[in-house]
Length: 76
Image (cartoon, rainbow, N blue to C red; front, side, top):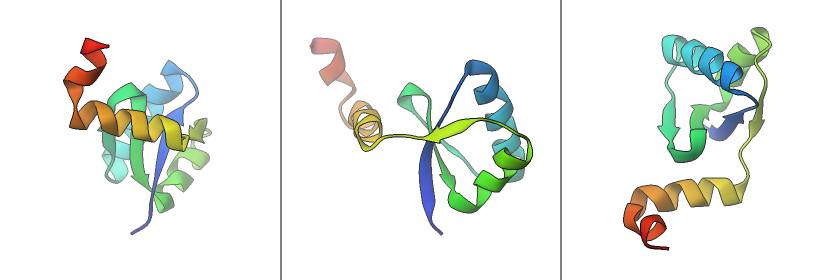
């Protein structure tokens, strides 16, 4: 199954989008409000007119770094 990392365009869209995804498919929440979802589930968001964008590679890498080494960001 192919996946994609997304960010919602506003807090309201985030709440609506996360609810729609969590109740209909699986979703993984990462730091900095990044979500990993199956590509096929994007049609759920599109059908509800929930705005989102693809997370940049830099945003995803930064989010993964926070999981792998949470103290690195505190010490900087």
